[in-house]
Image 1 (cartoon, rainbow, N blue to C red):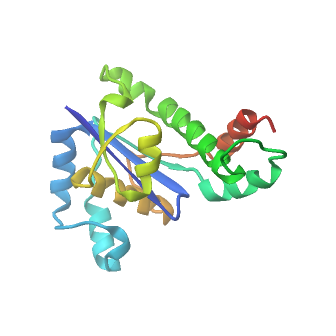
Image 2: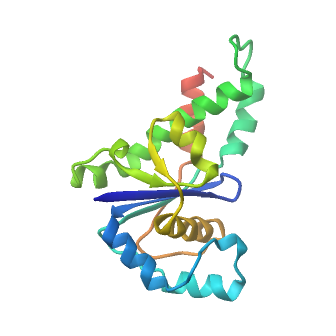
Length: 187
């Protein structure tokens, strides 16, 4: 059974995702051998120890993407002219941003999902409050954070702090997000 987790870091500048078999993800988490992981709250020596013990296996899909959400939204909102409708310009741009982000995540995950003959909507993701709105907005299944989310937290932290981890796909899709969002908004 495939499970997933996602986490944000650095105020939505990065999103990390992990998707894999529940047993594979449990093995990765157990190898770390640390009780409760939330990188923001740990001392530096514990963070270093956790990062050094994180060993991602090839059968697990791990990605960390730089999305710069608020910088992009703050840049685009003033460029919206004569927006009509019930939602504010900012809310409208945020919703359109989420649509574009979802499409880009699907593109990045598609080969792994195809290999496992599944769809992203079939996977239950462990998420925290930062991603609740995005996941419910796109109809993705979610549950409360647990072991897979702790791994996603480590991955997002490492990317935000420019700490490389082997076997993790890292992508800066900020420019793609801007281009696709501008196209979607007719700018």
